[in-house]
Length: 236
Image (cartoon, rainbow, N blue to C red; front, side, top):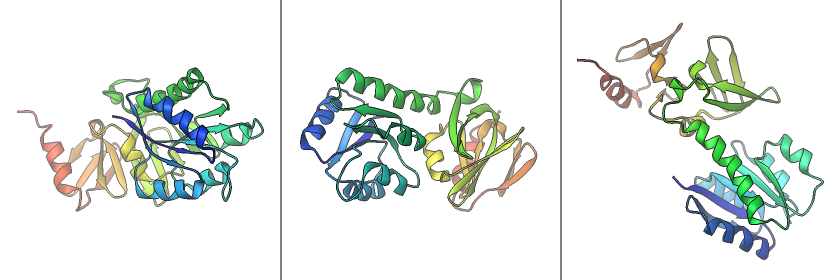
């Protein structure tokens, strides 16, 4: 699946360079270019964006301030002529910080960091792999969560709570974002407020699912799909 990206820079030449680099690769698609962050904000609200190449010094709204407006930002690679923002940018969890002029080789290094995150999430069978994990921001830190440890995921409006046998982890993230990233063959949305790892399901009925230590309701809108998936697991 191609990464859908946008390029945001007030310099047309800078956009042209990044766009030409993207054109050399088969697994990345530029869906839009913007000369200001306000236009980029509109695009992010209207369609799926996996990655943003983002300049910092721009009129109307800086790249740094733009990031702060996003509740669930895509992956972001900053592209700038200034070194001064490096520390602040990493506190905002950007993937990489590229100084202009940007070489194609350095561009590829930044993309590899994006791919490594995606590959961890899209492992063929992460629940069978004890090393599969994700990082989620919790209490101003990036916390490693082993996928095989997850019992269920609970939505708390704009936050999620990851339940494991050892502890609970709260992260400022919408459950729909995590649902898109987790492999659907291993994790299943059963309710607007819950995602469960299929392998951890101990029993189920038409209205509820049991995982270790907890019974969770099956939402009306999810019922048909949930039961279809679970019934396909029946052994004859």
